[in-house]
Length: 146
Image (tube, rainbow, N blue to C red):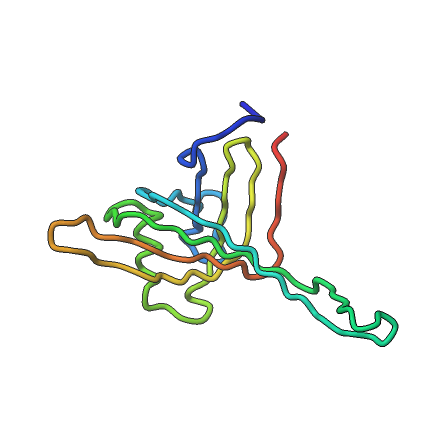
């Protein structure tokens, strides 16, 4: 396994738990035909301006959240792709599952997530799209490669 250098984007692997939040290892399936992703880290920052800082703001990071936006094509028959597509009308706990991001160097980010399907469809001569966000639901677990 290569543990340094530049990696092509296609070497990232994304898995979803097809049994929701009770998913175990066997339920974790890759999502076929993903074409792009982007990661956003949201920080909750508290601000205050005490008199002793002469007008300068103090800040403290009090929380974090991760959102991964994934785009691809709808692949009927692929377990991961079908599971994500099945969540498009779900709300509450029914829209929650487990998620795993396997990095090219062997690191793994695992987390409970809320899945928000944001787009399906397309032009009559296009391949149907599947776009969704996975949003961390609690503290993720980051495991560096051995």
